Image (cartoon, rainbow, N blue to C red; front, side, top):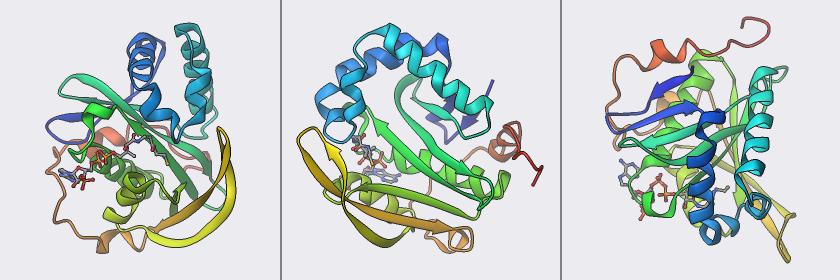
Length: 207
Ligand SMILES: CC(C)(COP(=O)(O)OP(=O)(O)OC[C@H]1O[C@@H](n2cnc3c(N)ncnc32)[C@H](O)[C@@H]1OP(=O)(O)O)[C@@H](O)C(=O)NCCC(=O)NCCS
């Protein structure tokens, strides 16, 4: 079972069916907060729907197209960070994420993202990571900017959210960008992080 510490307080675990209830309850308690930028929340109306979503996430993992990691902070489930895609041919991936409203403002997602970045570059040897978010989603843009992603452009009216189109800001981080980012706000991590991360699935060509 995938487990990866982020720091002393926070850890990532692969979401599986045993987590259905706590993931569902967290989404249910955060509907208004999450649906502003994640319209799929309106489809997650029962634990059975959550169960089907988790089955799809595990299918994505089984076919080596990335995974959904749950975030636990001080033992409590509080959010998700996941790959939207892993393009092994061109060696890039894209992240998506969300956090329980009450867990915002502590750096939990920035630090979880940093752990996923390290895994992508150091274990999977990818070359690029994309974060794409609505231009008006200031907290999400701040995560990309805090981690040293470069703003590469804006795609106009690319997503329909409830009743209107939104523009997306496209951020990219290259493997060569990563060592240069400021470590000023980085949390200390247990030495075992990379060792544990190695337990995750390798890319199909062993690269
Ligand atoms: C996007 C989202 C995950 C951002 O949450 P967040 O709490 O702002 O992000 P982090 O966990 O990285 O925390 C950063 C905040 O903690 C503060 N912080 C405290 N300690 C910190 C640390 N060690 N490192 C970094 N930031 C720290 C930062 O200053 C920042 O607060 P500020 O915005 O008041 O300046 C959250 O708002 C959310 O889930 N929104 C709804 C879903 C969504 O929009 N998903 C993204 C779609 S593209």
